[in-house]
Length: 412
View 1 (cartoon, helix red, strand yellow):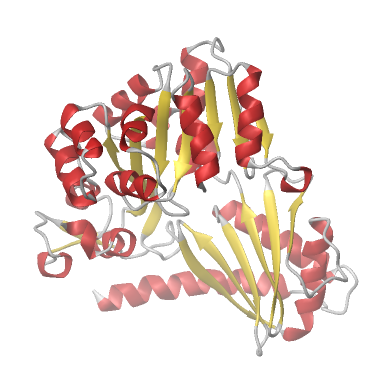
View 2 (view 1 turned 30 degrees about the horizontal axis):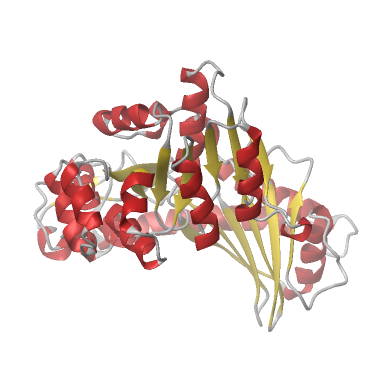
């Protein structure tokens, strides 16, 4: 197994080396060198399906990484002499101040085929730059059925978005596909209603264009925050509202007010599990009756990398995972998966619905998160750990990937 792991790591390094060679081709002193370098890098990132590019100045040079399928991969170290020109070129594209290096800046690259956001931050060896590529691969997830949820869970979600009021929260850590799911649900609503339901969004930032949806973006400089903007948005006669993120109590208060007054509210929220989202909202000071009445459902999700066809079956993984698995597979690596052993990602999800009597009573009684989890499972919720186990047994993902994304605690 170790030899195969080394083989696919070697292949990934070879591909990164080839890209590095293309980036370094030419004379660094040429006036167009930085332009060509950045254009090649951005194009390669988009083609590879990277979600982020990291450019980190170090004592040795410029270290560049990209995030593929949720994992950072190194493209290598580049000569220190090119740092200033590469950073300056990215700042020009993002319409940032090239002479200001001591404070963080944020901007976007316009006239690109996809949305790109650029963030700079001063460090010991120069400005660190991160480019976020929005919408890479999202064209594959236009509708609910494209997301890969189990049939029963997909049917439950389709039923929930047919409701006229309540909050449907999508929870998970950063990079777990929450916005992709929210967008797919909005498209589903628009399609099923044939455009007959008024839908609006307030996002920070807008990550992609949604046909038939009135989308707005937070502008703190102009006084348009999530909370203040949502209050004004409610006077626009919406039936469906997407709140980009319930990141604080003021935003959550207005969102629940909307959910309790005849609006279907979709929003993302940072929590480790569906039951954990209820506990976190309670910790924010919301009364149990508000949570029970206002929350339509909570969808907790994770993205795990999908094994490539070159996978290999293994035995005796139970000890490492801490729970029983009938069968398991590990990555090997081939040209098709760029030597990583993985190709794309799959979603693992659990759905908690407070409308069920046992869960609702547990919320009203201020029960602890573990008790809420037990109640939800008693009512039929399939937990994330069970979804992960099933995915491993089908050969869709590996034990190491489940440990990376869920941790051992997800095996309970």
